[in-house]
Image (tube, rainbow, N blue to C red; front, side):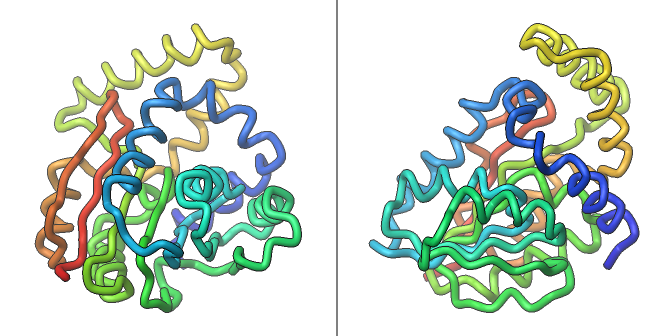
Length: 231
């Protein structure tokens, strides 16, 4: 497991119990951000009972939102943190259509074929080389016509723009009731981030073989992008 990803897993695992409550403050564009990802899933029009793989599933928040849009979905949640998946199990009690796996998805087999692969605020912890490798592995794990949707943190093209984004993020979190201590703790975790620019990631998807590659949402450092396996 890459050291940066291992450190991120430990940091987020320690905050697992409070993670969902804080996310609406720390992702100020929460509704539009996740809403855009869900709209892409709904517009895709895949299988009636899609097999869905959630990479870096954490507490199962994104998977639960997808299930709301696709009630027949069968979900497989993968995360490197046992503590995070313990919270996800509480979200899906005694649900036989939801399975869980503690694994480092940057290295472990992805299985499949999957109709839909999703991820939220996780892949940015990987190095650029590992991101590129993962995109190729996701493509191979999807069935023809399958969809990949990533609700992600990206970095601006220049340091000045990145600092602007961070400043505006702090202001928005504060306006939603985030305390200085909460912001400081989040920024400490962000030191483990390995964010890439949005254009780079769209290019890597296309080079991996994805088609219909697109970004449907961007708010400062938060972006939603997607691609399909040719069908």
